[in-house]
Image (tube, rainbow, N blue to C red; front, side):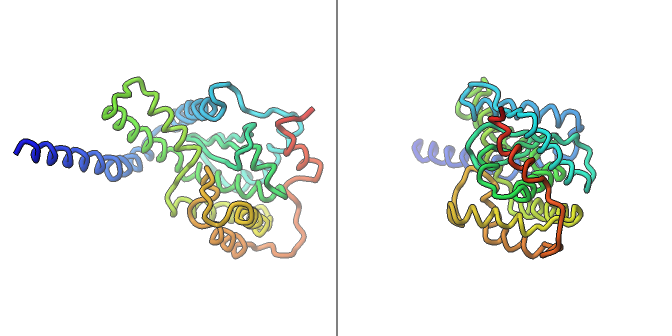
Length: 272
């Protein structure tokens, strides 16, 4: 009957969309990411960052914190890590004035830490561990793959639901990068990258593990924070991995920041 045909066609159409969204688009995105020129990837990152800033601020504008002493402290922390690996990207790190306990990377090597993360961390090494993790995502081009996948999926959904202006695609891209729901392998690889950076920089990755312990104490091991900091793999597993990777132990080490610099970094959004 006609009714059965309509139902059959509808089911077929839904199946086709799902196949494209969850199989074809991700596979194609992973392939395309390897062929995008660096300068275009950087341009995509800058565009993505503007969309994220607009989405997080509710359209109010600039969220970047520019405290002079805090900015110097952040640059020092980033340099301590960047001196221990090579990348094609001109890596840049900034802080957003927002209470979210979060950090993310956009294509092209731009990393953002949220003020909420700086306030939640007890030591600069905890923040450095998160920063090293984001550097790992940038070096592995995870944000580019995620952006291509999100843009492709959003574009398809836009055609289905009539969002031809691209607003849905832009918001989907911003949401995807903020929540940064990478695969478990990508998360594990980024953590491993951070652990190796700590070893090369002569820092105790056990300090990084303390941040996962804080998140578990505050939010539970399976909390759905809007951040890949608390996603794959589980927080308890990430804490154990950081402890196991520690090559410094109880030996004396040079802190990432002095106590004065650490205080300045935590005041970067309201420095007077």
